[in-house]
Length: 170
Length: 223
Image 1 (cartoon, rainbow over the protein chains, first blue to last red):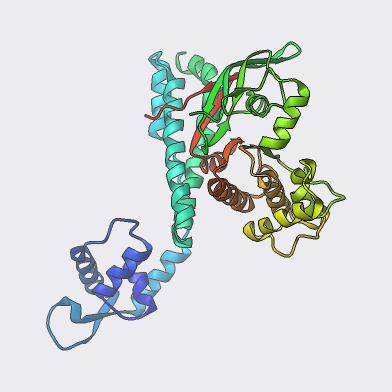
Image 2: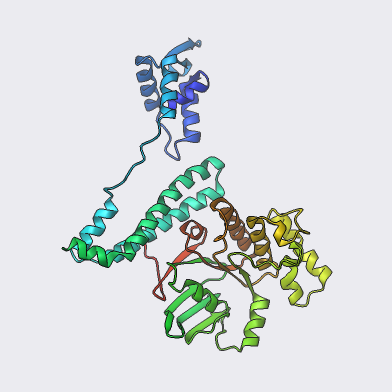
């Protein structure tokens, strides 16, 4: 969907799409060329893009891809549809805490380790935010807010461990 | 090498124990965030480290010198000469202009008014406050006032800056701008910072975080 969205700006070569994807969205994981062209083939097959003017020469670099009305409609509907607000009611962390309490293991210690791991990652993301571009900062913020929410849960759970232990041990 | 240290500090308020053997070591130039739930003793620990409160037992050291055994006057001089402070809010003197507020620690140290103001002014550019030098605290936004307070905390080039919830009264974005400037300025000056916060996003600006729980400092151990 990202490549299709990038094509809505203007017809582009596969190389340009990869470059822009890597610049804004890849975060250190460049998109392989193979994946770019496989995606473009699929989009063309589904009628969401067409191959525009082919410039002289051979090879995929010479093709310019153009979004179709159908493709543009898909981008529009994808953008307007909210992402599911994930309830995250089955998290690994929750399972670990409940199991630890059931087994009489030190759940508080596990939560402390998790807190340290979360704070460590928050520090990394804050460093990225302070040294990077606004695009980097916005992405780092997304991660930071999620980690912060987890930390609130960790603190609340740590404060209620005794009561929780009674409940899960019956 | 240690800049600020608490060793097994115990302190009660009446019958209520606040610190029950808290220890923390902060290296020179290090920025450490003290975190913990409300009532955990984190602000009390900061006040002990800064020579504001005297522990019932244990030791406080600054720059290789034990400070909890000093008399009130000596601690007062130490705080004025060597420490900077930033609190949550409301700490600017409302009758003074912003630049007079920043110059205040220098004036208290006996620096002449003109020299103190000259020293204070570059901080306005540095903390993105240029043009606000003559305003009084009532004419500043929360974020601006807190940056003035930060300039005041650092203007005398203290050995340590103590910050108690420095962004607590600010919205998230303004708070982060203040933290960004606090960390950059402290780094530039090589100032040791001890920061109390309940906010993990603020604590993430520090080099290291420690947690105070039930009056003790808990080291964070990574998984």
